[in-house]
Length: 544
Image 1: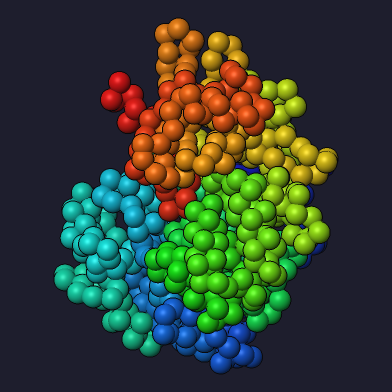
Image 2 (image 1 turned 30 degrees about the horizontal axis):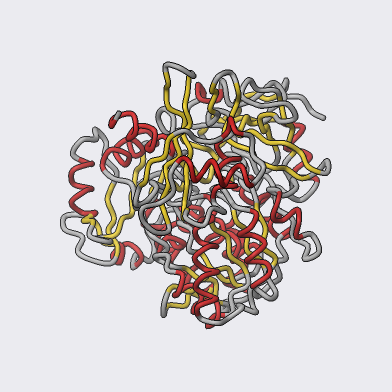
């Protein structure tokens, strides 16, 4: 295999990226990277299948012709304001306009920067300044949040603030989205876009330290879509239900890339509601969905309540948070046609594993996080890993081209170009990965390593527990103690003795039993459903 000795920072379209010529050549030879971008695909689709519906947003249906016309107009408006290579941010829910912005930026040779609409002043100020955004698209208001007022506060603190463009409401002193897409021709020549250039910058959640900008090229995303085509039972005409936020890598590819590259349709949900999701799947005949554990749990409950087995659903991939094997089994048994499987990935190496997507492989689908698709995976020794486990290191044609700031690359990659994921895992049956926890999410008590995820996966089966997160807290006697933060199904919730009895009945070692229980109404999570343990730990330390 190629080493990383010939990997350097290469200047492509004005941005420095990590580059390995040998692996790039191999990606091109396999057709995973191609000499085109999504903009080229949109042009062809508008010519060849102008009436095919790409996006469904409530009552709105956006076909190829309409998307190309609106994206072309917006690209001209963008080029009238900033040169090719500039960063265009958007902070939007799952609205069809986000696809117009995404495609317009691609047509204009600009870099898209999706931002979660749940971000507030502090995070937004950091990102806009760090990425040097030239334009940002925001709603006028959404869920009691006034974005126009927030942008006024944020831009006042920036030396070179981006132009603010407002959608679906009063724009105030800012530019309205409608005025931009009405522009027919700015006279600017649309550039030829290098598919190896950075096309998207996404920021990590920043659970430790400051957020880091993850660089993806047009081709790294293209490889990702090729992987979905190969492994996720996709046929032309399929429909993806997209409740996952488009500010994340997952939501963005299902909404923006798959419709054009796979011939699918994206059905957008502005806000997750399981009852509504069940109705949409039935009404629209949705075939695919991806989401974190709460999405699957709630959708299964809603489908049972509605007495439907969702016969059009072919695949549900579940990841982004701890996924109980029992949930996968229950959902697979109930949904009469669907394959339900766990997957694993990150913003840096999206869809590192593709799950186990055969109806006859229910065991691997439930008990593992699946097998690798395009990514090469190795497990390396780590001080937090018990025997038989290691830290996940992955590389592949869908991986990041590095971080926005080169200094962030220093500890992120090994000498062979593998990205060090910071998660621990073990292999099952040689080719299936089981993620066992975070490298830093290990509790060391009396010299014994405890994986919180291992204990959490068992405790979710406790009849009195709806959700649980286990964190390590400093303890003068044992070094650390394990604290279980529990959302109970009914008050008052279980105590330590109850947990001990349940875990003992499941055959778990006594030293893994939490010695402290705290009852909360809810666990803090990000938009992808991942429990934010750093917030839990900080809150517990503050109260102690």
